[in-house]
Length: 387
Image: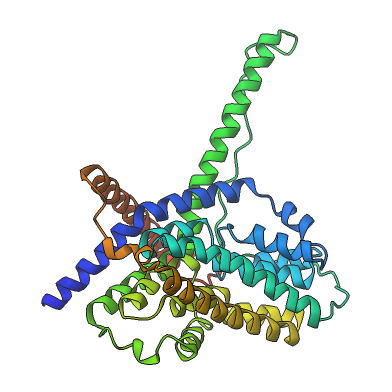
């Protein structure tokens, strides 16, 4: 009984610790989703040059797409003319990190992971793109009429309704003040529509994409903290074997960058080295069975082999680099912010964390209830591969 109570306490502690940062990340992700057009991505990814590879990695890194949601986005870009190297670079950097995962990493893993994680994701994406550019010949693309449909985005953010601005004068009037007022009303209405779209996407589609794995990750992290002996994972050591084990665990999983973070907390608590944990944080979100199948179908077996080799080798090199950095510069105090959970320096911060947890919990309950209702509804026209 005491173990169950401790398990629930650990779960609640992780949930409260991550709540404000996850809400902040979701909000920023919603803003980016509303303001960054797909045409911008297509314009900068159309060739196999080094600059296109770098742009793809940098553009993809902050985007709020999970390991499943990046698949249709990448297919759409590829079929719109994006090169193989640029598409692969986008496929690696986008799911490995994001604005939401960086904020959660800061809360649960500390500032060092929050800095190293996106940098490692961008470098590994550029590396993967360069490998594909050098060793995978670009075949002439045959345009397809099919349009990629997001497997994670079965619902779209509500579109703004047609603006109906009441005129302050009749059709014959020519008053400039009337035109100014009408223009102001349109601008205010447009801003409100954008704000609604941002909030709808952040608390709806994006949260839907990560709910299941986020809760599973928090639960498994709590289980590891409660019951797994500290020497269970350290038996593999801090070297190549431990990192290969983390890569093998992470590669086939359906898990996004945000949801993988609580699991990483559990691995750290169980004694695994920061470098081995970084391998899991990079390889897990970057690869899964669907991603590998899509790459093979759209770009061929050679590109798939190069993609997997790049993800695994880059994550292991990054893991060794992080271990060396932590040891050489004595940066262990900047890791595992969750170890200092609930020590936020006062009642105001405690209230902010607790309120954020209540808001996040309410949103999750609302979305789960809606998803259950849709599953049970006799009219269910969409397919859902992520939930």
